[in-house]
Length: 304
Length: 279
Image 1: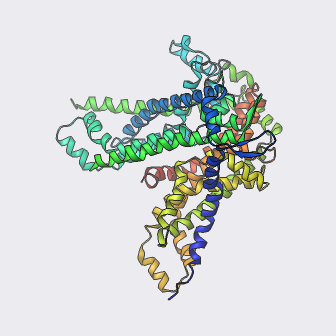
Image 2: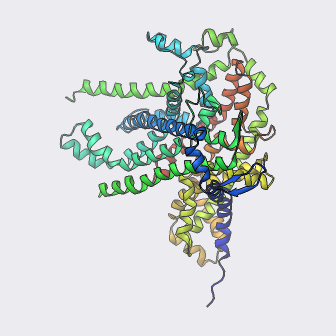
Image 3: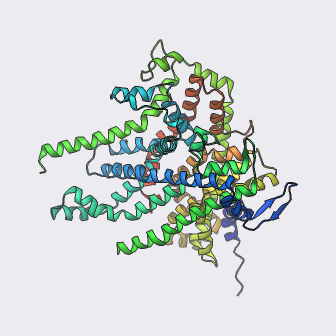
């Protein structure tokens, strides 16, 4: 018996698969492919092997900015891990306390900045930190700390840290919500039992709740990693494509943008842009693989 | 150790911390909005005060609305957000249904292929996306953004919706099929209405990143007539950097739609975040 051709299958799957393949999956692979090509001055595209990668990592004009961007991006990520996620954990732990009044209002309001566009957040903080307006300076003065105020966004030593903290301020809602959800899903009996055994709340938190939400903490880490190594908007909105002062806030996203489109005297190059995108892809890939093969596997073993 | 006074003070400490953080989260936004309604002098002399009878001014808003195409940018943003949103929900639900309902060769592989887009940002394919759009003559059109955003939204939508479609009871589908209902009618008239709550959750997750995106408008549609609100604000502020009234008003106008939306949808969104999407 010959089965009828499954037209309905094609009907249901084709639109999503076609659009996704044409405008997401194919461009990604094509970009990886383009990183192996080069455009000659007369516009002819030819195979170049790993030439672009040798240029990016070996040529002094390229490797300096690349490693600078990668290192800045790493610092950007570390600051998120050290500040954003612990604050998120703290807020989630407090929100999940039993019989906490107003928990719903707190979490709704604290989550709000996460939804606003990074461009707008960047500008708002730029105004807040501007010495012209003096809001931050006045605020510090109130606590007798006015002498600490500097133009943090304008200095090479502090601009990147300041931008990272702005990003932390905006996105703290995401780890908070994910961890909060994980804490709520822990069965009450488990906590009760420990309580009856005489464990202090502090001990219950560190010995029972935190180990149980480790998979969520792993998820938060990988989401932070992918988000940070793909960041662009905040630096671009506040500091422009040149990621000043003196490239001290340059991260892979802004470096990619400049490489692709060019700036000032440098001419943009599609194939070098593709090379930078490929390096970003590799960085993200390594992070995701580490997550799947080490963190998640070990966590599932830990759970059983 | 756990006396009543101790418990009371630790409760106070919890509220103090949460309230303190809530203020930190909201203060910058509130500051910008209240100052956008003040005269230039009041913005600088007393930034923390609410606008009063002598400090109230709409000069900033007047300038933004007169000297930029804010309404056009709004319209553009709406268009390139709502159309992909509709397509992601429709095509996402259709694909989720097919993947979870029908057993066919390559089912698993296709699901994995579609899920790949969740971890790998579509931005990394920009070089090729731009070349495709140039080839299709779509640069500086809304269609370019619509296609890219639809592709971007599909993976997560399919992942979440597959979970929900799978929960539709077998008996319901069996009964419908026994009645001779076609697969198409089964999906559109029975399944789709059933998974509406999940679709609403997906809608919010899809919409926020699209509305807030700057990267693709900057690259695919930077022309004056196709600019989205993010790009419009970006350029307006660059141009009027020293005119604080206009800058604050422009920021407030750009924040407003999201605030209004959040006021209506916050419960939906948070329920989605704390239940369905986490699994």
